[in-house]
Length: 327
Image (cartoon, rainbow, N blue to C red; front, side, top):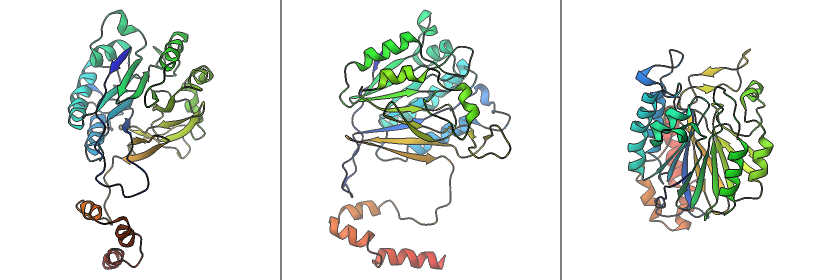
């Protein structure tokens, strides 16, 4: 199933301060909001809606703005229709303000029929099928793969899905392809029990991906940030906006905690991708400069900027050290 969601390129920086050009594409990678209907809290503690709202607020601070908001699954904790409706009500106005496409991906907590009806207005037999979709974001192809298994928490892709994906990838996209799926094909050295609910038969997917124009694989599921490679392609796993998994728990098989929530920004260039974790929690600023300094720096020559910012005894650096000493 294909959807054309081409968006204009994101606003460029006024002046490039370094040797690299602006990114060609900017993606906000969010995962595992686990929304619940009626404001119910997870485990009686975590407010999943508050986490998602905080993530969306942080998104609107970013420049350049993302061209796509890619959600890698577990959108609704219990697949409630009201939760999907609330998800759209929260996300779509923000996406519209940003001029961003929204890419939804199925997770193990989602259920196909309410997911398809609530997010795509699809009902009937098509709603019971795997919810795989293709999005065009200004020439970048984003393929949302449904790795869910009805009645289970592990993931898999059927032979029909793999054949469909091979057909999609047979023709390269203008700026390559990003795969979005809930169950990421990565090892789990810090949470080996998580492998019980991993994506099965990963080699079958690798055989389809290898040698194609796939540039990135984006996943979620494990509620922490991680990176790896798969079939020669970088894999980025985003943390959750609800609760997260503690990678260093004390005497616990697994440990879900109310902290460390984040999403990941992905900046694509012609020859590389840059991933940046954006924490959701507020933190006190201990040093910094106001935003209008950007315009002042842009008015300088590259040599003047280097002398001001890089030179250790420049007035700006001396002023910063003096401020720190005064507290």
